[in-house]
Image (cartoon, rainbow, N blue to C red):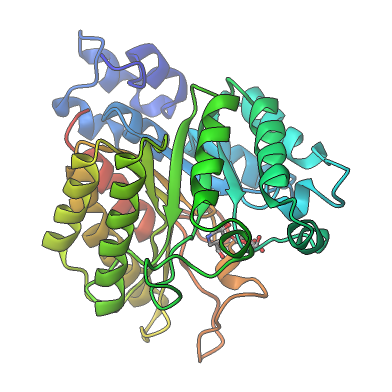
Length: 375
Ligand code: 9MR
């Protein structure tokens, strides 16, 4: 049995009490396919772990200070991802200072609730502290990048399942190799990726090192071209011995877009053929183009996510699914940076409603996990 698979005792400890007699009826220690109906109502964490996968969700200090939310979160989720607390702007108010208070608080929360953690993110062109421009212009880019990654990754060494080392480095129109024009690219050229992955590996040899990007989801020419560009980048990194272990596909999906399941299956296969794992890292579903009742919107969102997840989870190299938040009560889709719906209604892109009730999207993720081949 994989170390991730829950034992019957763990299932009984977490499953609602009403399920216990059904679960007790079996004799074996591993959750079998025939037991799955007994998991009706079981959390996404348990469903994922029963298939040798993990389920996680982003959270932040605000959402976890809400006790009702935190209780649901710790039941439903196996891996915590800090939504903002490990970004440069949060950790580095000035060049000389590191502020780990909030990041440490989230790691302590995860440890206290028996959750694993994913680090997010070591290199990004956003959440950028202002002082960093001057450091880069002064020729200190490599030193600052190495120091940051060394300090942050070694602080949590042994406690991170994985790190999003480089985030969103591709923008098709920006350069011939499709690397996004960022201050890191300007200062160091493409070798900034090598520096980042090598420094992270040295600082925590156990954590899986992830390249994370968005826009790899649907059948549009833009997403198809971006999938190809990401594969080219990963293939180049692997060929040069850069220590990258996995691709994170963010999956900020848009209901109403066409999903080509064959193309997604092929993409996931290509990632696997490079010797990489695949993680869905930031799943949520926008539905700007969908009108109708709440029920109709929720159904369209759920169906869209299921179409995306099925081919991805059918690939044995896929190891887990993370949603970008858990409840619409706390979702960046309803935050200041997000695109609003034309009718002014809030987005409903996460598995739980604002009142923490399970929505059809929760059910779609649950069934996609249940139907995933056992790892
Ligand atoms: O959800 C995050 C939001 O609360 C932050 O303000 C923002 C900037 O730090 O980042 C959002 O998360 C992004 C993630 O880090 C990378 N992929 C896109 C996510 C949504 O914008």
